[in-house]
Amino acid sequence: MIFWRTLIFICNLLFVVVGDEHTHTYKDFEEVVLWMNTVGPYHNRQETYSYFSLPFCVGPKGKISHYHETLGEALQGVELEFSGLDIDFKTDVAKTPYCEVELNEVRLKTFVYAVKNHYWYQMYIDDLPIWGIVGEVDEANDVYYIWTHKKFDLGYNGNQIVDVNLTSEARQKLELGAKIKFTYEANWKKSNVKFEDRFDKYLDPNFFQHRIHWFSIFNSFMMVIFLVGLVSMILMRTLRKDYARYSKDEEMDDMERDLGDEYGWKQVHGDVFRPPSHPVLFSALVGSGYQMLTVTFLVILLAIVGELYTERGSMVSIAIFIYAATSPINGYFGGSLYARMGGKVWIRQMMLSALLLPTMVCGTAFFINFIAIYYHASRAIAFTIMVSLFSFCLGNLLMLDICLCQKVSISHNHYQDILYFVLRYFIFTSFWAYKIYYVYGFMLLVFLILMVVVMCVTIVCAYFLLNAEDYRWQWTSFLAAASTSVYVYIYATYYFFFKTKMYGFFQTSFYFGYMALFSVTLGIMCGTIGYVGTSKFVRKIYSTVKID
Image (cartoon, rainbow, N blue to C red; front, top):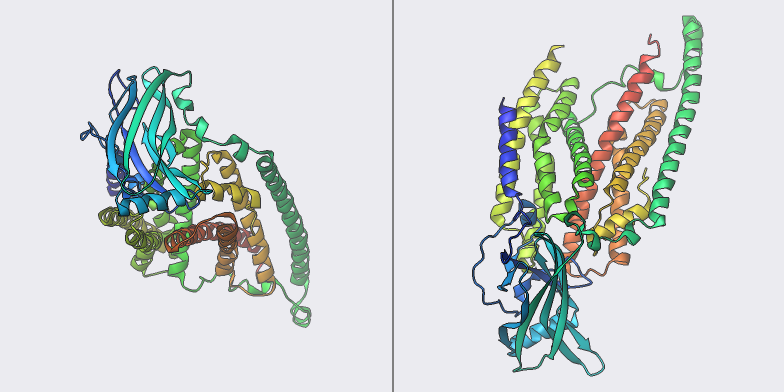
């Protein structure tokens, strides 16, 4: 009962937070809000600042009818500010001045620096992103210009906005004492684009659906089939020989058996099911792995069905909701494994399971956030939001874990890397460069391929370990599978230095901090899959051999 009440509370709270800014439908002459988002150098995507950190000026309109920020936007540091421009649905606006800036020495240096470093800015109208360049450089004469006119071409289909384009015009030379007059205009045109297809123009099918992408998936799939078949054939042949040898040994009398040379995995049958060292940590990692596997699978499915890339911050919001709602999975699998190991200090195990991932995520986010605040970056998250989110997740996780760990403990006490290089490149490019990743069907297939390969490779490693008469297969299977994360982090390092143009302490900390978090989480998931597959394999082979 407590679980369901808590789950309903989570749903209500998060759905209120992630509700859409509006219904995406307008009446004629109804207000349309232009949001100003960020500004920053084009070649250093993570270095973003508030749009008005540059000496731009605000339009004359001071009030709007609504304002909204989702949970995902807040956690991504997206802070939208009203432009002050008066735009109404289906109402054309002729070229209109809206503000003026006089360039003193400070403002001049700021604009020149932005133009020199190829600063671009981002805006939103009805959740549709718009990008523009601050200015341009005449390198031959060492002269800097700023674009002063924003021309918006908006397409509508019925009562919905389906297309927005920005044209920057009227450049003006940047010089001390110049008066920069900013203007805008809005032109509305009927469009045949359907509302559900309005994000298609932002996608890059030539990039993500390139035949190299298809080939990488097909190649990976064929490699998996080959690997699974090879592993199965070798293991079955080897195990058949082992069974034959052990059956022959059973037919010998005691004297012949003593004179014989017994060896292999049967010799550790008395120790193989011993609990691993540090069972509290081990069970907490496995429980967290089960939960993260569930979260990843569900988020990818929802992304395939719901096209989450069309809504700002929706992916993060939904992932947080699913993570909070699936905390019983962590409590059940982690607690039941700990109980099977004969664990007694279940409160310590429950606390570690509940705190392991949230502490790691929040610790990394806090560290990077302090750096973002120091550099006045737009990605800085409000401290109150971070504390509230951590408290909210912690309270729900602890409540759900306590209920499940108690029930699980009582009941039980009573009775290597197949992530193909090209696909990794596509995913990294979409996250760290100017691409929107939308082919989540590919991602789901590769995710399943990765799980199968990790399981097969880990089973082989465990067999060799047991054959060497070493019974400590639990941690070995987990760590062998989790080593995939090391390779991913090495690739991330290569990608940073050779595929991006990011620079600066904040950008470096942001990149390597979150990539470390991603790699550790991937390692926990792969480790869990490796352990689960190996556990079933070990129990199967020992169940078919007669133990003296």
